[in-house]
Image (tube, rainbow, N blue to C red):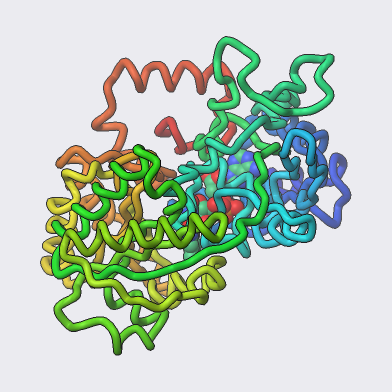
Amino acid sequence: MTDREGNIDRLREELSGLIEPEWVSRVGTSVIVKPRTAEEIAAVLRLANRTETPVRPRGGGTGWWSSTLPPAEGILLQMTRMNEVLAIDEDVLTVRVEAGITFARLEEALGAQGYRIAVFPESGRTATMGGHIQTWGTSPHTSSVFEDQATQIVGLKVVLPTGEIVPTGSTAVTAAAKDFSRRFFPADLTGLFLGAEGAFGVIAEATLKIFRQPEASRTRVAGFPGLPEAVAALRAFQDAQRGGGISTLVEQRLVPREMLLATIPRLGESLPAAVRFLLVLRVEGDAADVERHMAAACALSRERGGRIVEDDLPEWWAGRFGSFPAAGLGKGPRIMIVAMVPFAGMEEACSIVDAFGAQHGLSLKLRGYPFGGPVFLAHASISWEAGRPESRLEALARARELMAALIGIGAVPHRVGTDFLPVLVERLDPAYYGFVKRVKGMLDPKGIMNPGVVVSG
Ligand SMILES: Cc1cc2nc3c(=O)[nH]c(=O)nc-3n(C[C@H](O)[C@H](O)[C@H](O)COP(=O)(O)OP(=O)(O)OC[C@H]3O[C@@H](n4cnc5c(N)ncnc54)[C@H](O)[C@@H]3O)c2cc1C
């Protein structure tokens, strides 16, 4: 047995002393640990600090930026055993969950009491709350109004890389019995752990806002001959939303024609061939608002050259946990390029993606949705072959090239992971990156948490 092999076996043995051995296993040169409590996570992190062993938290593994692979000679902290709803509080309208819960499981528990959360991913059958919070999670179905998961967080229970367990919401005030606001301290320290891709600590629990299930919902499609007309309609929605005219238009998604037809083939009959760019419009709220706001959104679309498919599309919402994107994306592993593009840059971004696809023989299409203002969360993906690991490297080189081109026109990356950090770091203000490194060094002095994420290795 080599020294290296012996070290990994010793690590596994030590971890089996902290967590029941059935939840500790070895895969290749990594040890996989499945904790059940924040205290168990803390014990693992203290051991990792003492032995300077890299640790990577993992939820559902649906983040496509390579930062969920088991670290070599390190520990993968698989969070999916921590999957309970801890409390639904109808007084302050929150739900407290363990971070490894999937969205499908959470939705079931909340739905039984007539509630739901506002922001959930299409990967929600597998993706976990902890992973979503750590990746600036959004929801194409609702983010045009509710923005991202970060806006929904009231408090967290975090295990710091050095093993301390810290509350970040109002329960940090010892007399407060529950989390009902994270705005009690003169700095948003909860924010440190949002979108941090597991580099600053492990989220063990989260408290989020809940909402009554909407009374009604309606989905229609507006088809446009070109991108400028579709973007003009999106701009008109933003203006109207800020003026209160169509406040319940929760989804305004730009979908390539091919993807929509792959998911709802019957639409092929009602969409003329001249229609290339589609906006899926979905409103939800009370029945009267739904009628009024859908009528207003359709009118704004028509004024900008849009044609409305008059049917309601109930299957769109029914497929919210992934059946649709799966059909539209195609099969097999892929690297996602996700960037935020101001509306004014959308045409250029689309041309860049189309030209890049043509140059490299890739079938690439930019799609996405507005969130947080007249800004588009745009994404495209490059597939690779599961049986040919070197094809991932080729795809990654292309993906980095494309991300760099998008940053070059003023876009900013949305998910970074280990895949895009090298592209981003080169373009970061040195003062900002120096600040990030100081925060990382303070929280994680041994650099054990998710190496290669947030700070390059
Ligand atoms: C088909 C498909 C559809 C998708 N649709 C959406 C969508 O609609 N909206 C959206 O926002 N994203 C979407 N995504 C991207 C992805 O699903 C989200 O980023 C997702 O929420 C990640 O959750 P996860 O549990 O799978 O996290 P993972 O992929 O396991 O982890 C993601 C990152 O978070 C870290 N992490 C995980 N859990 C914890 C924790 N408890 N504490 C600290 N760090 C942690 C990991 O180390 C890693 O860096 C989609 C992906 C796929 C494959």
